[in-house]
Length: 305
Ligand code: NCD
Image 1: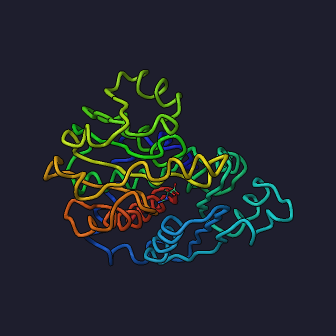
Image 2: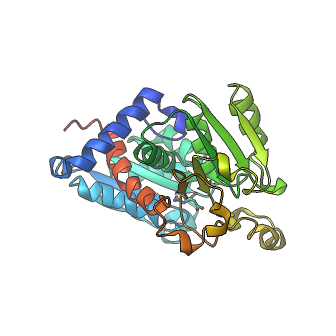
């Protein structure tokens, strides 16, 4: 049985298979509408979410399956002191597959060790978010036509942003990608990403503190929110929260073919004046999240259509 905890749990070939399946679902929706009939997905969200939980639920519904679950730790037996392991063992008796989000790094991994059904990590603390990464990869494939040979700027909270950590790990396995890391020095990517991913694999990367100095080189800019809930003190958050605001003036030297991505939710780091710019890919990205989760559910359940 296969779980998805870290983006590298899937080989590049398996990821390509999931992305191609998502593309087939997009063009042949009816063919998949009963693919998961009689199956249940449990969404166990110990931390808030809009897109991830609802796109998982919509994905299972569009496959003809059913969903159950909870959307905050307060409404689960975690408040009574139940361990993650026990919750997973029990929910594994009711559902065929589980998507789980937890504020503690490693909680979904722990769950997968005792789970009788596949576990999908829907975000663990500041660590990983592999299904957002699949969403991002499908978006890059659809917007750019290829997952190789481009320059991507990752901007904002690169320290606590789990979507960034997972995306870097996944993209590090493709060819000819240059990473430009744009953050204040307090929010740089963790050291393990530099040593274990970039240096170990001899990958081209650069760290800068402003987006203006690199904008003209970028094929993709991946904006992120400063992760308020992971700061130890409010004053640091307040000082850093408005460091980067992407607006029309900042795009002056940008390529016409730039893609602007954001995992969402947005706070103020992309001005709404860009929402109608054809380069703004973030709402298309959110839609891709549903299709790629449909493909992932089918793959982990071993359903062939
Ligand atoms: C992200 C997350 O939860 O890490 N959201 C999402 O799943 N699309 C990004 C964020 O919360 O900033």
